[in-house]
Image 1 (tube, rainbow, N blue to C red):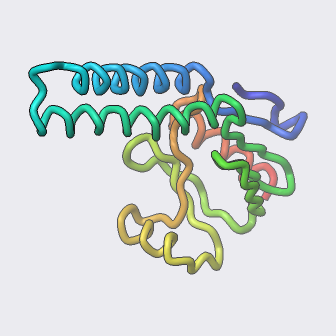
Image 2 (image 1 turned 45 degrees about the horizontal axis):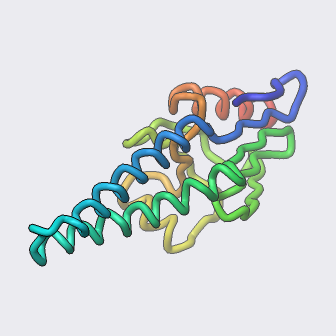
Length: 158
């Protein structure tokens, strides 16, 4: 969901609840299949391992989805910069002057560099993708649309 505009800031982009619910349903399917595998009388040790793996996948992905439904990811674009809220509620603010233009990366990522970011994770990301930071999917916008909105805001407010 996109709220606000360049003329009436801030622009707020909230994570897609529809995509989160679909992911939760997929996780529940893996959990159900794992449960079925555990309760099949013909299951051997390999089948039991697969069954527990399905349940573990459901627990991890399902828990993440529940957190995303309770507190969805959020981007706020304002004249002062870009603010992101992560899955666990951590808020990170970046000034427009400190971020590079946004580009499309692999796997529907929107990539950018941050001035003076010498963290180990940023160095590793640069090694893999050429940019230190990225914004993943899970929005109602495509990666192309998200990059365009971010670049428009950066160009307007830098």
